[in-house]
Image (cartoon, rainbow, N blue to C red):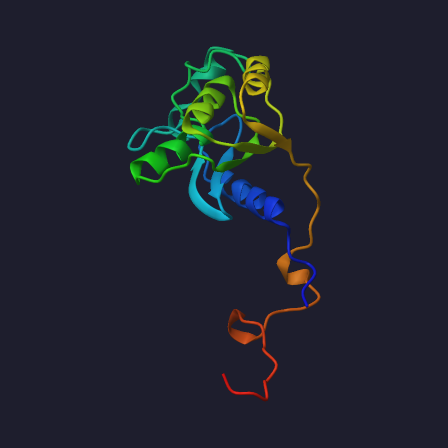
Length: 178
């Protein structure tokens, strides 16, 4: 029996970290995964709207204007990961009411307001974000907030029990018929 499997929260947070690798933000790479009943409904990462040039190509407006993190969210050409995940769900007609959000960073106040109205029940995050209004809004809402501390996990290749060829575990032969 394989005892090296990650728990569900670690699993979805790791996926959020991988999603963040698609980010085109020059300041902070953020990934978000919306999950319900242990199924991924939508993902998002921070970057410019579809079809527009990314900050990687045109530079960072916020850096040019010397805007501190957590302030003046409207002065950015990009969308936040949480916003993109909500938009992806809406675009594909997927209800996220009652779902959980796994995000590499604590959502900002704008994203929290969107998550509240979208019906997100829980937010799991790994890194903080300097937006005190966000925490205040969460405190007033019904959203449960959970910080997940990153645990150094073994790489899949370091597992004690490797799957059989073809990616499936070997089954013991049964003596009975099915």
